[in-house]
Image 1 (cartoon, one colour):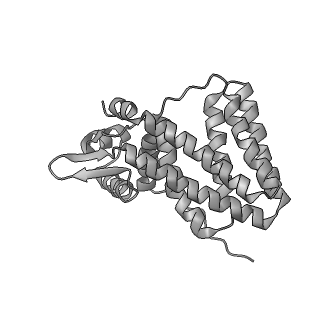
Image 2 (cartoon, helix red, strand yellow):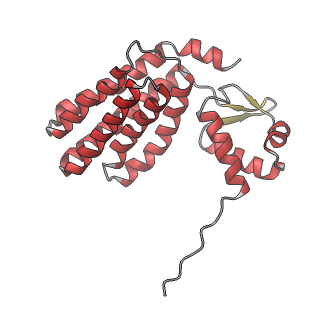
Image 3 (spheres, one colour):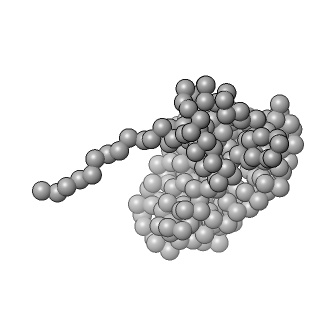
Amino acid sequence: MVLLNPIANKSLREHVLDTLRDAILNGELKPGRTLVESELATQLGVSRAPLREALQILSTEGLIETIPYRGTTVKRLAKKDIEELYSLRSVLESFAIQLIIDQNNPEHIQKLRQHFESMLNAAKANDLKVLNQIDRDFHDSLIELSNHSLLISLWVVVAMRVRQVMALRNKRFTDITEIAYNHLAIIEAIAAKDQAKAVALITDHVASVGDLIAEDWDDSQNLAAD
């Protein structure tokens, strides 16, 4: 008989951590927002002990910061932070694509095509929220399909920050199917094993989004800090 460990429920600290992290990454708790322990504890219906533990973890993740005599706030994001984030994202995704091409696994291409089809369907349904989620899934898959453990670990932090930035931006498309089709050329280049073209496409794709966000970030930041 195989002995299996029981599935443990999440601790209260983990529930508090997940709730606060999601609120920050979804833009509900915006950059510059002051986090008052007594208010948060009351809203969440918990004592301060698990709350403080959760806040310590969020601090190590770089999502909040505590300044002496000024308290704890959701960390502000400067234009430089956006530029650094997207330049690093470009390097990581380019490396992932090279590894995917080297593996030459048809199933990987199939998975990426499925993401594209789902994005296109969401776009045709004019569901930008679902489209953005599938867009994130596509880029997460690029990293996962690399089968590079350290790369995947690094991506966790980058993806978390990207999610926060995307939630705070206010980008409008005249035709959101363009978002889906932007990914198709990348998939086709990977399928054709054209490493140079695939890397150039993902670099341009990530850079164009990063430049667009950084260009308008001052206004977004002012809005986020009110």
